[in-house]
Length: 427
Image 1 (cartoon, rainbow, N blue to C red):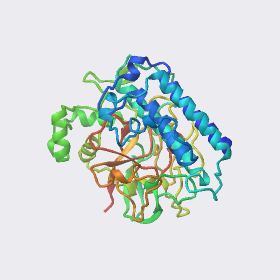
Image 2 (cartoon, rainbow, N blue to C red):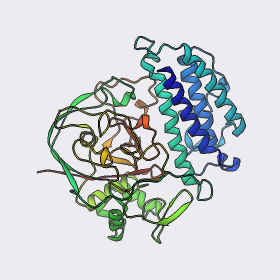
Image 3 (cartoon, helix red, strand yellow):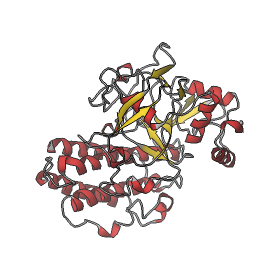
Image 4 (cartoon, helix red, strand yellow):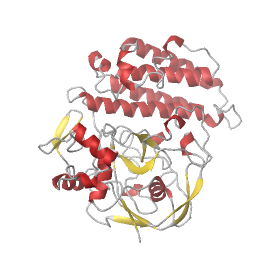
């Protein structure tokens, strides 16, 4: 198992380094938007976080660069100000990453990751957390690379399956009744995914696939962005003040940009880079609504034949290329419904990968929530205007691709690789 953790840490680090390798020093230091950090800040933060949790907290070593603690503390240094702090530049940041990585791997050799280990090391918790953390920052860095402009990043893409034939129902009915929501505590999960608890959900319909560009184009053509009655009042104010008329990276001439590529909007792809406000307005336009977290997870996890909840839509097995589009290899979504082998037991497609999906729910803790290992990961964000996203995107690391994983963001955010699917009540 230690070998697996060491290999996973090395693989995550390799991904990080490959993301920044072709990026110029100037673009590494740019802050393209107050929502995003300079890419080189992310490099130092990844190293500082690894040093804090693997080397100091789990390994009882002194911090390698204690003077950098505040610079790379995500709470103490909010995103908007990260371009102004004395962060390490490229070569020094890469050296810091390598030094921390080497001492972490030495600690792994002597760490007790058995179930009887200390609270951080037991069953490899802190090692899993650091692998997931670096993968999450890889996704954030890809958001930055998309925002910074078309002349900065030109990735090599793995081919994706073609659009499937148009068959099957548009929506799937999920029966009412109880199911077990949240992580059961057998393997790694974040604190906000726990405890597992029984939830009763009324019968509902949910889209069989994510909302496509074709469907969203109809909303735009029907002046969905101009109809105030479709919008949440706060969302309407945001739309007007920002002049939003279409998804981010769509242009008025019917094109869409993904990194360096600009082409006609592909009608078969899931719509992406929409805010919660836009997703909510689309659902109202269609005479539907966004699913709640409970509905989304039941449709993804619940097996009506066994009454059990699965870890992933297709079962408890790990992600694979024929099941979902994950892991930063395609650099964009696949056509909606392109992975029939990844279908959930309820008959819903594409619930993991391609694009995050907004839900109607606000981010808060489940009853019985206990912060671990630090409150700033989840608890600090409870009670605000944050809305929950589920499912992961094409840029999400496999270790974070599970039915119980909860992402969250402000309802106006559009830089994330997020789309939606709709739900309806069954009378």
